[in-house]
Image (cartoon, rainbow, N blue to C red; front, top):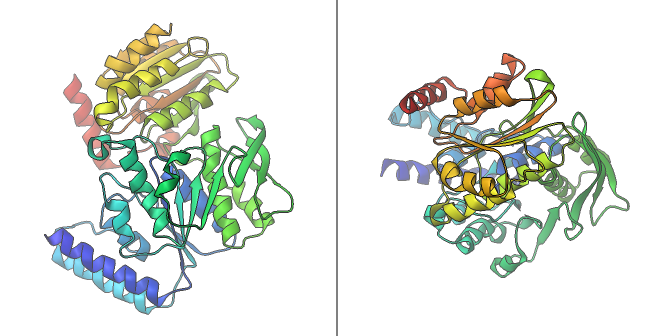
Length: 427
């Protein structure tokens, strides 16, 4: 009851703030996967011209998104009435004071039906970017059609929508009621798209960005790994063009885009190896895209460390089997699984394909196994979910420098304490 009361007050402050400062453009990013990478890419490119407010965290909680829009930190003690009174005072000051930002880029997540549509009851974004419609939190959504309704709701309550043409099926077009829709992607079927002409691990993708309002393509280099990680950059370019940025500004911004921690972030491993840290979370679309990116690397050895994909409900068995079937023995020296679902369903499918497979309950044990079988110059993909997997701890075993541990996800004192307890429970 108290949480709902606080939420209502904060949402009211957001309404007043946006009404008081109509010159601020609110951009939201939602979708099944890729939200954080897209949010950060959008903010990076827009910063070439605008003052941008961006909160680094993700915001599935009902209280977090209003606070992030207002630029107010989440209180340490959420049960303290005095802490919330201080938050309310800060919100009133935000409303009264001259604005210190031109653009707010806000991630809007959902783990149950109705959370994205609810956002539209207290804020009308200028632009909504929808990154994907794919299986997520299926124990709550049940069907992919319900996922589509949830995520695409953002397009209908925003002034303009920019939608990923590659990862959102055209069969969901009937859900859209907003006629002001633009598409982006890495295929020419989108209005904004990037064609990669060359890839280098150090420099990234060199290619051309095409848009409907430019006389000629924008030549740019984007330092990310994998075709699916080019799409957040293309989304950022589409948003920037919508806000009137020049091709020169857009190119400069794109060349500053970097991978986000735990999202296909390339780290230096022991023995001149490349560690692909994709450990923040995992889903069928993200896992398949990560494997395809690994296959495209020209290296002497490839290893895939794949954790269980959580939150898939009744589709879990089929989705894990599908990823196992994607594991190609001609491309992979080893497939290593972590977690119960991956052991029981992904591993057998990979073995049936002819892959060498090893399965573990602990990410630390999996990291030790990779350490024993790693060849000089290899590339290792780590793709896993949060609860019960924690593949960032396997990455930690193989880093060239302990300084890079700070680049891994879930390294706060509380997370390290929780993970220590989890790994001890497996012993």
